[in-house]
Length: 214
Image (cartoon, rainbow, N blue to C red; front, top):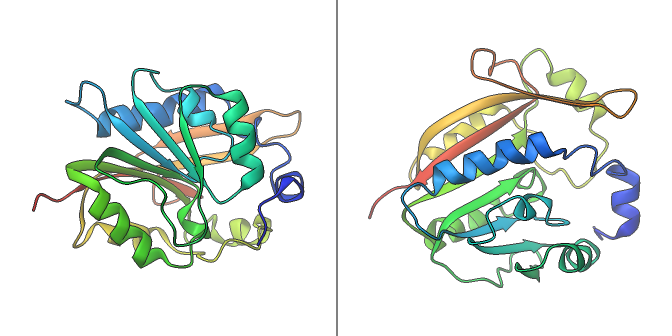
């Protein structure tokens, strides 16, 4: 699939409304937790799109972003100075580790070669480095609704939350995970509510994992 301007206009025409500052602050907090103890962390944001998340990080961080979309990366380079951006074809990783933090917000569901990607992440995170990701989940009471609303043909993984939590086995240790209620409401108001108590019932989850020491 070609992730061009038409793709974003068709499937994510309200991209900036769906990524308000409070949501990006939550993502930043996750990344800062993952980078705890690093004076100047090196971070890679996979599927960075227009670079909005990276623009909300401390510019003292060594920030890298990659995406499969030439269109999105072109916009990111114009909008977010001080970040090393690159276009990445499926299965290709133009950056080399080690990284202190790797993030993937609403990205893994698009990646067909998931095992190879996770292996690359594990190999390019420093021992003890943090992996932060957010994915939609299709189980629980909201599962049928999420399947109905999901019109993105590039979503190749429509999985339950236990599948994603199981990624901790082997390569990573699971430190924390929370549920997220999110939806663009009428009037352009974006709901983004994080919960631990009801994380088994939300339409999306956020996970913080750490690469296991060798």
